[in-house]
Length: 364
Image (cartoon, rainbow, N blue to C red; front, side, top):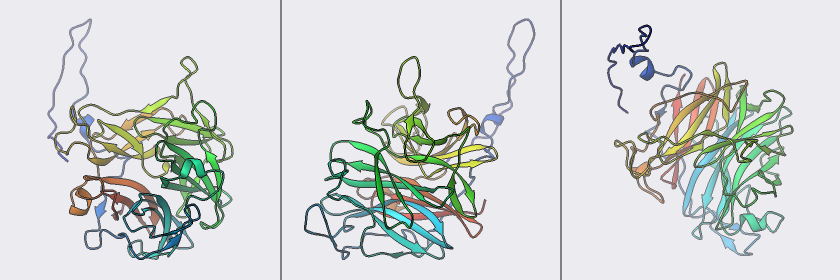
């Protein structure tokens, strides 16, 4: 990342009076509402890699599957009873995705469970989840302690944003498509980040103006609202009838190709902080990053009006620069999905090159 020295420039506009504009250095100074720095734990990363010996009897195929032999990636994270639970996506050699669970008492060293905790079954979601599987979870809690998980179902052709709940992270109820069975049923949709506050290390979903809010999308970002965290309504423009876009790619920047939510959206004093994943376009991009590289930025939305963008970082704060981030199933990828506040530090968990999982830490 390059930060250019501030150059004090005074622009004089000839009009009825002279008007002095803001100094350019004011536009590139650090965003104090944002996380300033995460340190990658180079001594341990990647902290999770595929285990080719974990075997699972798939209820759909009726055959045994080595369910994470190809890749592990894109984890969500939460704190429960002083333990970090990492729920991660795993792929077998047929590229079917299931969700596994690993736990840690220091945030760095994890113990995997032998079988996936969430996967395609012969149920009402079968047609949406097979053969591609279930992908990219994000989790918050309700005030009553119910776990709310957004995830992507993939039938091999279309990705659809879905939702499931659990009281204990092992027994799950699938609630179907977040965008419902109406006009958006077959719309490509992903990555639901619900607005939540930190309460004793728990990410607790929080109402704003009587509603829960969710950011979603993987090219532009949109919003949906709910009264119960289960049933969601897409926010639409009344005139056009289209989904309201709240964050866009920017030509010339690291996020020139697409933007996609990272972990839950963090409600804080300054506003709603959304860490987002971004991809660099093939042209009209950030020339310091490879084309199509995934890096992460941060955006701030109004805490009383979550569709109102207040500010946005001009640069990425994490990007692929390690061998395990630059080469894998998909090259040049740092994909952020897990964030917890644990023992006075922030732990950020991310997928690397769609192949492994790493962690970075901030004392902020």
